[in-house]
Image (cartoon, rainbow, N blue to C red; front, side, top):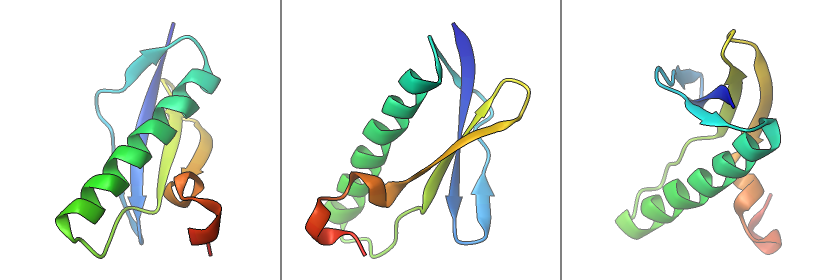
Amino acid sequence: MSRFYFHIRSGGQVIVDQEGADFPDAGAARQEALAAARHILADAIRSGNEYAPDDFVIADSEGHELEIVPFAAVLPKGMKH
């Protein structure tokens, strides 16, 4: 198991994940980021919030950026711009 961090980028700001979570590999961390993005977007829609974060920035335990997962990646095809 490795520790991955899911920083949230919104506009020019980054909210740093201080805790992280353990996953067997980067693919599993990516799947978790996609599931979390769905949840966050659904909450934003339910609450009538016009804004949602832009991306998850997945980093490893050494602070290296591994992948950027756009929240828009979880939207149905007809809703992506």
